[in-house]
Length: 425
Length: 86
Image (cartoon, rainbow over all chains, first blue to last red; front, side, top):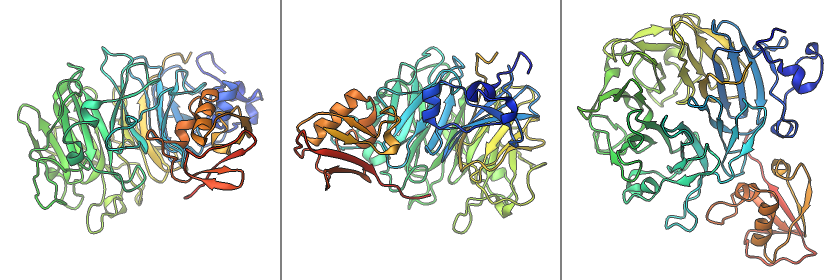
């Protein structure tokens, strides 16, 4: 073993490396303080956590897995499961301290909560005050799931936002330990009109997602409601207004209402914060905020593919480059890859033209990529990653030109986020 | 009183299947349980004080959903979680 890797298997089990990997329950992790064990992505032997390179945090319907590679991104190791059996809607490593890992969990019929780790899963604590609506409030809302986690502004290092189902917004200012409702949203006079009550278990049904913080101004926020639309606050969440002009809502009697749309994923580009991209139930859109109108850039997608999907992901250094994963939105909306031929599509000119990127992907596949299950790293060239509902994680180390399967046979994947954690060597 | 803990909640009780808690009502017992094992109550009872769906409470052999139900020190409280889905 070289000095620049962490030998998880040996540390956890106290056994020889050749003994292989032992899955850990969360109780074992909590009790032992042990790091999750690393093995090769195909499970054939001990793996390693390189001292640098991307770490993917994969949230699934049955727990969390970590995937790690060196900067070449050609060989991957896997650690997990952690929280085996827990429903993990979202798991995010804080890009500011590169240490705090927050996990949104709702499991079985237990209430929703947030778990925290500051050592890449070696030890976990539960939020002492998890996100919840105000006790005794007029609407008597009860949070059914924490669905989305967003780290706050760089100047507010302990601040996080959480979106829920019902469509509540919550904020922590202490690194996710204690959470409070954002009253300006949850108690907004229009909440009952804008928001939907959940009728299905998350991630189906309605939820609040896509919380975006303007890197120039911590008070400037966007959020998305499925369904409900995109909303903006310029005062730190005290007041909100819909931002849906130009976006279609074809399931509504009025095709272009002020609100009631179904954004699936909304991203604000950190280098061009007045540019927003949106993968909507009714197409792919871009907005230049000064224009105040969504433009359907998905009209430039091939007509036999369409522009329906869940995620939309950004190039960290080029605001004109975006990736999407189209799905079939025809007939009864199977929401699988169109024609059973999985492909990523990329634009490098802000949506004027799109190119198909499927080299290495299977010729046939019928899974779906959910809205949190696609991400990009910060390397050059950019790494692009997605996880499927059939439990596969795919990665590209060349900006989507070629794809390789990193791991298969995980549970249904709900989220894939990338981090560059400190403290690895 | 003796409180029996289902397996999904034993991460809060150091894996103990049975613990002690006190109170004059089920709600008070659950609040005392939360003082002893922080976080356990919110997994069972929502922020409006309602027992979560499919979370069941038995006082001795009687299934009870009204958390204001009075209990005695020699009663036994059994917390159970139904499971559904795969």
